Length: 271
Length: 213
Image 1 (cartoon, rainbow over the protein chains, first blue to last red):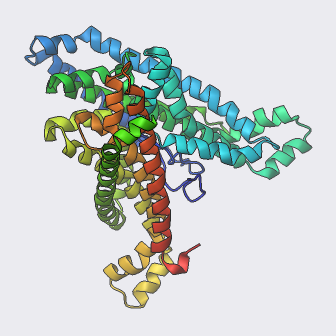
Image 2: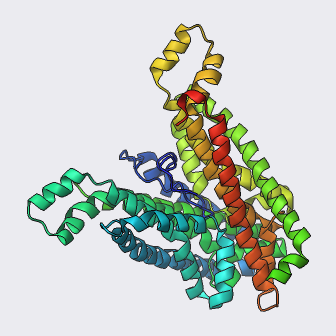
Image 3: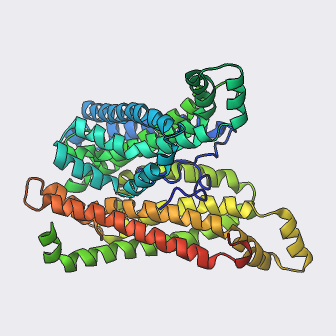
């Protein structure tokens, strides 16, 4: 199963958290900014959120619903969800980028295929299964969830780091060497900056995977907005269920937007 | 573990079959929908941006959230599984189909027209066959994704191996919890690998001989 070249680049963009994200889009990073999404997305999210807030204030909710959708609760769950996502995203980058750099160094490069292959097979595991199995091993709670999320979202960033680094023009490396740059300098000042757009597209994919998978945190007592969905299904209260689903979806869109902005901001000026 | 498997072999096999059947049927449905949409999108240029945006945003929505939105509409059981698996499966195929159909050389289409082919004939006999390898790649992405989405959708009492994972979760601490979760998770991985292998074969068989690598 394959990181075959035919996959790369055929489909762009992130996948839902059940990623198996072969879509990790190496090599096809559209330079064109999609201004409609960049401006429209946050507006849409804010408008929908405002609509929900008005509904929440005015709807005649019963006691259970009122308690589940208490403002403080919702705020706390949202915050937990964001923390889970952001902490794991940072860890993913801290793990995946150095690993990608290592795997593209001469001598180690032979390992690239096998490592990515194994990671790909692992990625076929359903996220919920990974969360449950890790919880059995490491116990419930925030830390386990962060581990599960990090493991789950490493692949797209790793894969894109490798693709990005291998995609750097050999001629440029030669030129850098000719200018007397050291290996470390070449890596930091030529290779990585040139690979940033591809890496960032992997980070965006990872963010989407993370914010979606974080909904399962509630199953192992690690908080997050998944709790509202879970409660809604268990108690069969559509108001709680839909509120939870809506808030998670909005948060995912917002995180996607942050990813898009980051992508635009981090891109080195010369590119 | 071994005992667990031998004791429940029939049930495990049945769930594996259900899981596969759900994914295959949903992806098949998704393929039809995606191809029709793609033809429409490629025909009407202005829809292209819309299609891109929809598939980008669609893939952003977490599947557990979509499940939550779908349950009030269709209840619990098999239906929500079909709905959300089909929804996610459509997006990569649509995207790839648009890219593939767009990628066909204009000169070829012109020749087709010059040979007197109707637009439909040119679509069916030139465009689709040439775009097919890209479309199948989308199909593989979709199938992989669907295996996992189907597992998640089992939370609403849908069919398939996902049920084992949730059983394992609810029985944590119990004797068989680990077995349930392991069989569910590993089963999905194995099925995904097998299906992907089959799709690779299918791709080869269905790719027009002229462009076969």
